[in-house]
Image (cartoon, rainbow, N blue to C red; front, top):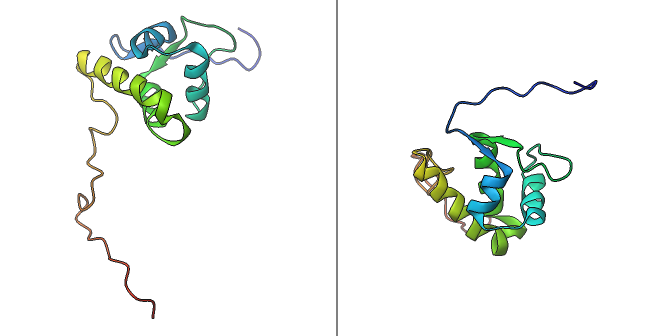
Length: 116
């Protein structure tokens, strides 16, 4: 191991995903995937690295970033396919754990009124 490298933590079976799996499941190019991954601030391989393993939280962060911002055109279809892959494995996709709809927290939203 080189200086500065940290050993990878062993992930539970079924909760780890290789880059190759994500590329195939999302029907997305490696370049687009890496753009989304970097925007999500998820660590990844320097070059290529199709065997690089991503954790469930990494994949959830990538899905969240793919669905919003500048990636909605290319990322949204891939995010939908990744959500289906997670559901197939019996895992909760991002956004399903918490209800972020207005009023879900119990707090009422204020309507903008005339300035005083």
